[in-house]
Length: 306
View 1: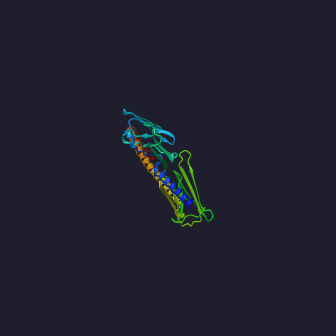
View 2 (view 1 turned 180 degrees about the horizontal axis):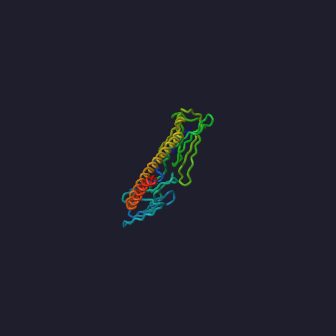
View 3 (view 1 turned 90 degrees about the horizontal axis):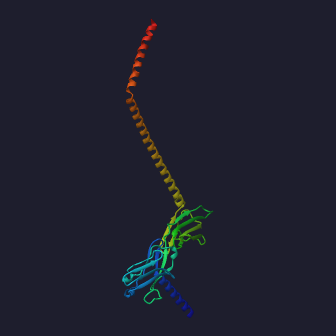
């Protein structure tokens, strides 16, 4: 009995410690700036102050405020602290951007002057997160009596939880789901792919849910019968877009051809008029021989008859 009580007390203490640590953690969105809060008003009475912000044991920022008002701030990765921190008591540290590798990292503020305090004045836990893309749900070809569904999402952090539901309430049979989450080597963001293989009727509705616990974000995608599957929808949408684009291109070519032909006709008429006005004398001389030849043709037959 005593052992059971001791175990229960130890478990409660552990859960309480975890809850406290969770409350102290600040959520940073990957690629955005975040501020690690630290307010310590007791330093307002000091004249010369030197502080350090440390990430674990690594010093990432040093700052010194002198009695004459000069401020010296030296930091790595462009970390920022307010220049008037000793006047306001706000020693919060601002990170210009959040990296996934800093998940579950602890930052601490130390005073390196006025007695060289060894204990940190503030300790802040940073956890990082990034949103996943909307899940892409595909119905693949059937394998005998079973149908294969594929659910894919990318670009999130940390690794998500994946759930499948059939007709909104029923979980798939045990062993029918295989999920793989892979971390990208350069960004450390996750891509997740999950397969569901089960005997499902064409009328059933299948849903894939991606849950990011850090961000308390839930994304879902649903596939209906074979006719309404995303594969068929995307194919029909692609054909519609292609045919529309083709009609637009043909229409533009026809209109351009008509306008070009009209332009050629106008140019041709203009050249004919210019040619006729530029050579009037020659045209007049051509008429005289025509008249004489006509008269000669008239007289010719009479002489022959005589």
